[in-house]
Length: 325
Image 1 (cartoon, rainbow, N blue to C red):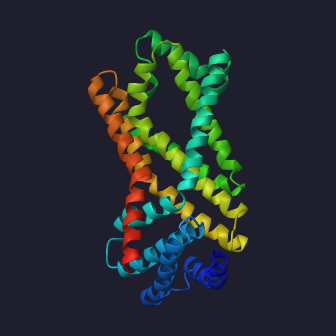
Image 2: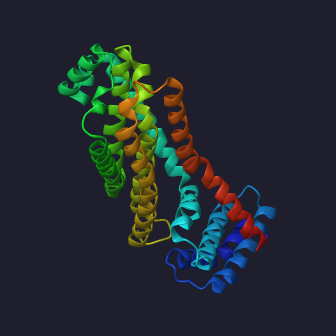
Image 3: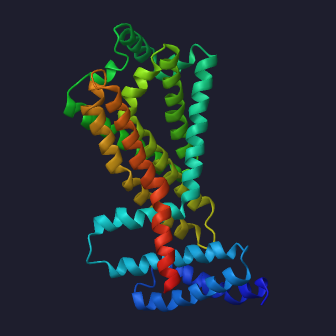
């Protein structure tokens, strides 16, 4: 059978199943199973006869989503919290991996703009960070403690205040995606230009290493989380701009729901970053270099593994289970 005829013959069935899955009209695992067995057969047929076809990717995503719903229903007696972080979020991240890539590209681009601007304009850092902060930091550098600003206040006060501020930034980064993704882009622009100019400022003052070993103790998780929250905002914006086979309203509900889940997944990392900033960063000048670097590498590795590698592992297992069905 020619590929065009194959698609024409099964298109309505696939679209009907897709809408049933995403609108959750098929809640019975047995009903779902009987439907996706046909889907898996179509996927196998396409992989055999049309190995380079884009329809394989579409059917693969649909099969993985149906697998997720079936086994989610079967595991209602398990810990919902564990399932959320262990399987549901990784599968969502794999599904929306393209938006994670976009968010990282924007983050790196905006950071580079901040670095280049600070390097070529002597007034740029003061414009972005403010005269008060720059003057205070210069005084701290002269005193031999470039990151002394993180030592003000109490441990718990800093932890709570910083965490609430980071949660506020993350929620804004997501919700502003409702403006066709442009609002998310703006929040990321402001934060990552600030990051680039901030780090260049320390480089210019000859204390880049001191700033890195101190600030990135908490910054590894904090900055990474903002990128993920940016991806969630882009998902929300894309759900409005590109509804695909759904009505714009249904697409928006899907994008909002999935985006909220991804946003919530960053909260443990945001709390962890706030704890490190409130209780560890303030002692960076007395913490050995190996310990500072170790904390930075461990925190960065944990969050990078969860968001960039683990989703592929979970998807591979889900795909293998679907293929054996």
